[in-house]
Length: 455
Image (cartoon, rainbow, N blue to C red; front, side):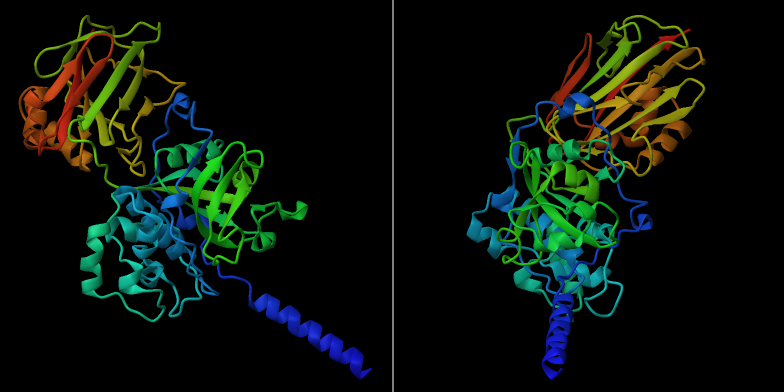
C-alpha cells in the first residue's frame, strides 16, 4: 500500500512539475486588441506572382532567447526578433554583430504590461506602437529585466531606432495569408505573428506537425517572428523564430506548414524601416494608368505643371485606375471638381497605411473588380496624387484646397507647395500612362495631377 501511495505521489509531482514548466506565452488574442491596427493596402494579384520559391532573413536574426515562464512574448517577437532583424538588414551585420546589437524585449514589454510583474500578457499592437512612436533600446543597454523602469534617458536613446511603420498584412479571415507574408519576407520585411498555440507546439522539432485534435481554438496567444519560407520544404512552410531558448525546436526555430499557418496564425504584421535608396537612383517614382472600361487608355499630355487628357469624356464614363510606385513612398490621392467638392481616393480608410514600402507596389482603386465613374458635375475633374517621402496630413491638405482661392493648381500650391520637389529634378512621361521619376533633393512631395474635362 505504501509503495502504491508513493507511486501516486511521484506521478502527481511529475504532472505538477511538467505543468509548472509550461513555457511562457502572453499575447492577447481578443479581437478588440486588433480593431485599430494599421492595415496594408491590398496589392493587385499580379504582385504575388513570381515570388521566389524560398527566401530567408534568418542570417539577420539574433540567436533565439528565452522568455522563461514570463508572459513577455510581445517584447521578444517585436523588439528582440523583428527590430533586430530590421537593423541587421540595414547594416548587413555578421552573425556576431547581430547578437551583439540585439534589442531588448523588456524595453517594450515593461511599458505595455498589464500587471506589476512579468507574468501577465500584453497586446502586440501596443508593442509595435512603442517601436513606431518611441523606438527601441538595445539589450546591452536595458537587459531582460522585469523590475527595471523606463527612464527619460532610455526614451531619448530609443529615438534613434524608431521604425517608420508597421502594417497588418494578414487577418484571420484573409484568404491569401500565406502569399501576403511571403511577399513581405521577399521584400526584406520581417513579420511578427499572433498565433493560437496548441499544446503540441511545445514539443515541436525541426517541423511542427499538429495532432489531429489540435484544429480548434485554444485561447493561448503567443507572439513569434517569421524569418523565412520555402515552397519545397515540408510541402511548403514558414520558418518560425520562437522565444523559448535554443533547446526548443531546432535551436530555437521550427518550420510550420502553410496549411497550419493559415489555421493557427490569426494576425501577421510586417515591420518597416526607412528605405536607403542609392544616391544615383531616383528616390521617388511612380506610374498611373487610367483605362476606359472598353480597354482603351485615357491618353494624356503634360503641360509643364500637370497632365491633361487628350480628349474630353462624358459624365458617367467608367474607367479603371491603377497606381504604382517603384520606390517606397507615402501615396495619397483625392479628386476635385469645379463645384469645390473634394473626395479622398487613397488611402481607402483611416486605418489603411499610406506607405507603400516595396520596390514595386501596384494598387487598383478601388479594386480590381470595380470601375471608377466620372461624376455628373460637367466641366473638369482633377485627380491629384501626392507621392511623398514623409507622412502627410491628407485631410488637412484637402480642407486647405477646398478653402483656398484660385484654380486647382494654385489651391494645391497654396496648401502644400512648400514641400514640392523642384520640377528641375522631376522627369515626367505622358502618353498611354502617366509616369515620373524624381530626386527629392531635400524636399519631400511630388504632385501628379490629371485634369479630365467632361460633359
